[in-house]
Length: 300
Image (cartoon, rainbow, N blue to C red; front, top):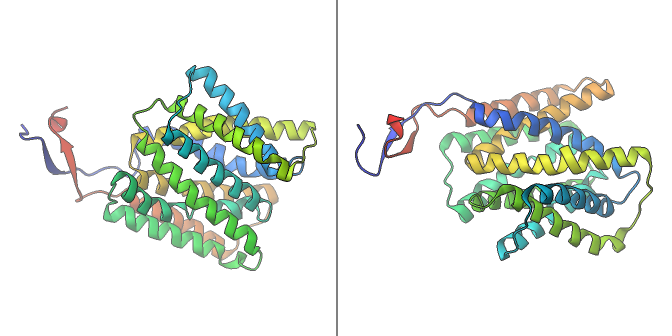
């Protein structure tokens, strides 16, 4: 029997838990394919117009589910940060390939770790820090043979996106007491208004069947559902835990691009993917690490 409000209790955990995997697997698949759909969509519309339409459709879908939006200072900030992340990512994708964009975007955990500490007082465990460092080392190793192919503009835009993505990811955790569907509906609809207001700066659209296919994917599986899955994962677990697990996205994107193009990844690319996976595994090892167990938890 436990007494007191809480105790330090060594609780070994399996590297992966079902509650995370059931959200992570579809998230990884939808996100990886989204790099390719977005890249193709930009052939028919400017990033601002394409993403504004994506946000509008996704927001309408989620509003139909939640029946409400949340107007507050925090949601306005969240929406502005999300739009900033999306715009930098989209324009960066003009200059780099889908797999390169995925690898660069997943410098995000390096930013989310200190942001989570500052905004939600979430202190990472030693293994989470190790997982982030090892995972990012994999990102760096993967990028070595590609450095000559990256444009400076594409690299900078995509990495700036990673910073803002890390910021709004932490805000999901901060807003975990709010209805996630209403949060995402508000996020998309306010974001759509911002991007439509900015679209005259870079307005281009050519409506074709391929364009509509790209837009439908990006608004549904790669939009409303992708963001909702990410929000649910952040609500149920620590930010640093989930962001390290998300290194699965560049791993799957690299494999997917290799299958689609028929090109075998180079040795650095293969080693980078292996190290990223090692980072994920390390972050999930908790044997011997103490965690706070609420009163009565050990009895359930």
